[in-house]
Length: 333
Image (tube, rainbow, N blue to C red):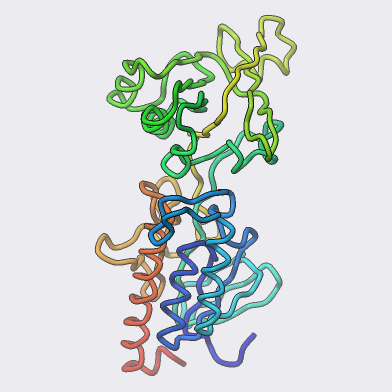
């Protein structure tokens, strides 16, 4: 453990964390960035990004992340391949226990751990994620102009995805394992009344077909008149039907999980889904000196550009906080 506490530790290395690192490093705060188990975050699952400012021809997700890290390192940010397994935010300075067994102390923390999309773990998922399989219609919908696409889910997220995709796709099929949507009444009505959206009730996605070179080519669906067909198939129910549907895109609309497990027993204020609550005007959290940026605090927009924006805000907020601490030397001990 370093003899002296660090000025700021940034937990997470996606766009929010990298943006924080650039601003913090340029302010001579010598930030340490903990990359987490998936360096670069969700953006590394996207093959092409066309809606990020400054790239009129688009840019690959890996390329954007690589450039962001290089930019942060050029200003002096340090990156360490580790995640936080325990956070002591009650005392000062804060203590963070890392996955590599190390414990570090810091005067300020920027949480940028993001949120992970829920997945189904069906065959073809790992191979085709980012190659026709997506968890974000806003990010990837424009790649599917005149395509036939499939949306999985029955809640608000799925209905929003399906409605957005009608702007581009030739057809949109929503697959839901029950006969009733969980979505809010207004979104459910908009989706069911849209002539460009077809519903497959009591059905589930069982397999995704294709390759990284071809993209998604088709899917296998299972259905049962009483719903939850995958479970009934595993139980040997003979009424389960199997069909193959030709599609060129699959979108998961089954929600995200914020990466906040290590924060559950801390004084931070988390909402009922686990997202970090922040001051509506800043990135400040319920704990002075702890700030949150990107998808870990944003359950609504979840875009690279908004994550980058809140990342810069968090660094500026942390800089102002640390400046105030210089007038209270007992807190810096």
